[in-house]
Image (cartoon, rainbow, N blue to C red; front, side):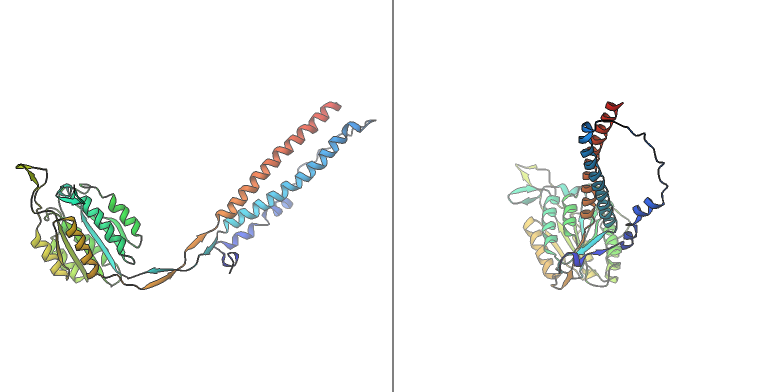
Length: 345
């Protein structure tokens, strides 16, 4: 099947405007005729060149009319908005709704984890491994919640994992305050997930501290989540010990996790609590969650829709440029005519 056979028009009624220039031509009042005085001369040899240019100008006049007609047809076709569908693509879909709740409080800038062999902030390690986790979750709808003293939705549930990874990379420590509102983050996640169809709905909550802000108690929020069929996996991140050199602190502090509360949250919802003291442990936790929440292999057929209005619009512009070039040439012919008239006067 050719491309032209698959083209559809969003506004096919726009083609009713095609005869509009002809209608205007016949209905608009004619310009008043200007009679010119005849010039009688005994020798016309000087004006033979002008006669040839006059015939050329007449041909250019009709060429300009054709160019305008073609430009109008292309412009109307662009307004009708042609579209076509590409070949079908197989898209894996699981129906799983998965929210990532990421702590961006002030303590996430502590450098007690490692990225490779180099010390790194907790936030940097979380960003890297969370992005890898999102990349593996083909077919899931994934969203992103950031929380500090307040909680907010950074990315709604979407199949566009590239957008989720982008906003993960731009997460800024302290943007939502320096404290930790775990209960508010869970409450916001429940609000977003319970609006989704009743399927596998999961919240992965990652924090390095205890609940110290917000108006919602974390355990009570977890009980509401359990009643809405939402499973919460909690991850506590941060080293158990400060890094010291010769008895001097290197700017890190021991993680102030409330592991009892995080364990109670996961237990209330049928999830699991994980402890990440290093980047290797955090990577293995995400791998474990992949096993607990497997990605299904169901597929749906998707046909991308292509907008084609730019092609006839480009053709209309091309014909307009050519028409403009012929207008310049016609102006040159008019200048020649005026020079002849001045010569005879």
